[in-house]
Length: 277
Ligand SMILES: [Zn+2]
Ligand SMILES: [Zn+2]
Image (cartoon, rainbow, N blue to C red; front, side):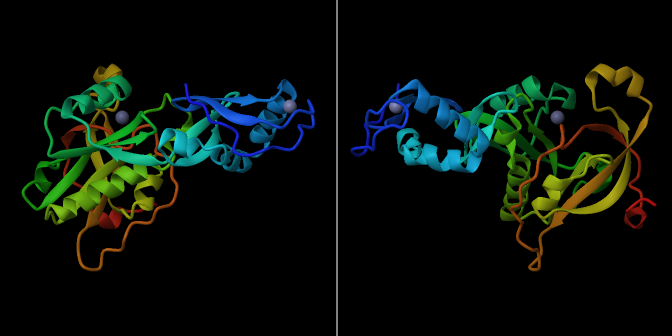
């Protein structure tokens, strides 16, 4: 339990007439409980916070949550149903390869759990693991041995309030590119389904490179029925040259699966085929 003493002598409460008191009583994960002088003030504060998340953030900060928790608050956000959640600043967190496999198995099993790769990273919100990115060699044989890496998986969990995963995919795509560049690779690529907007990639400074047909499946459950169907994909890339523009940091939400698995490949179709008519 985390408590905080009142900072100063307060004005009388409009509801109970006692010195007004509103303190952070308890914080656990993304939830919190306030302690107030009376029920009336508590109800009013909750109403005000729901009306105005920006005010809520200032208020929650003013009662010392960042000092209490040792973390920076990004927002106080609607949890998508009936309450407010503490949305902390996203951070990278080094995790073990087995934790990456477990995360993908739990949240994106349909993408297939990768066996081996070159490097990975994870993003957390508070103590909650939000997403992982796995970077390895290109899956398409034609792209191997050319100084190119591929984001093989980028999985963002969907079982948390959407506010908590805000910008997580862009942050991971941006990191993958910086890390590939730092390690001396020439280029990094990844794929999205043709019907996904790719806004997280655009926000991270990636560009559409080609329209691609791949034979494969996105859902293990549909494996059999999809086995012989071709799916349209978009290949995205960042090439590392002196003129490479720095990534923009706009907010984007990822699609359900930013990267999905292709198991067999056709020859890439021409870049000039993009965008489709
Ligand atoms: Zn009161
Ligand atoms: Zn996935």
